[in-house]
Image (tube, rainbow, N blue to C red):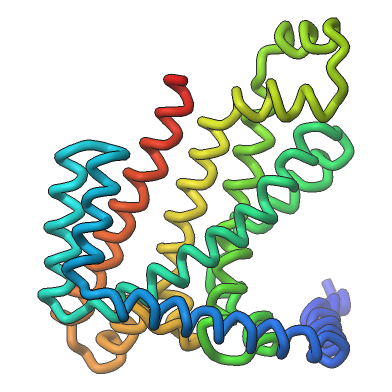
Length: 278
């Protein structure tokens, strides 16, 4: 069939060019602020002796999770320090935490909106399906013209990639609150805000924390991909090992990402379980 091709690529290029031209003042300012904040955060973490940082994190792990978690955290972080990957580890930790905070700050309100209003739910859920099925590499494309190469572009693409679970599970948790409890709150005269803050969000907190946990895991999975646009950190070490055909060094950096993922996963999982027990 001789049907003209729909010029989707040209339309997307025109949209990106328009946004880049008209939002350059904002993206450049945001990029400078974010990059400066990241540099200060990394420098602050590196100013702390590695052994002290490890002991503090292990103590927090012991308090929050238990002895086995504290021992595993201590051994894992000491192992990374022994591999001379301490600085990339701190860079990765800062990047993941900033991206997770931004994704959660945006995602949870959107999830609440999707849970409360059916119209918002019908609009947001297909967008999440689109975001979760889009290949991760595609998110690097708009990040470069907006923020250039570097960690800020990596944070932007990581936030877009990692946000859907926070939105989806927040909405799911609120919608799964038993209807009889919601009806009881209505019968006692609770308005929408009271019902949300005192009933729905507390009961949905374990599911919301599962969304936060998945957001962190997706952010870590994006670390290596984002290294292609200058993210640095452990992902940057993996990317350099691929370019230089150094499989051993790439495996070392990959183990570092796994260790960070396991530590953050246990922390957030335990927090969600404690909310369930409460």
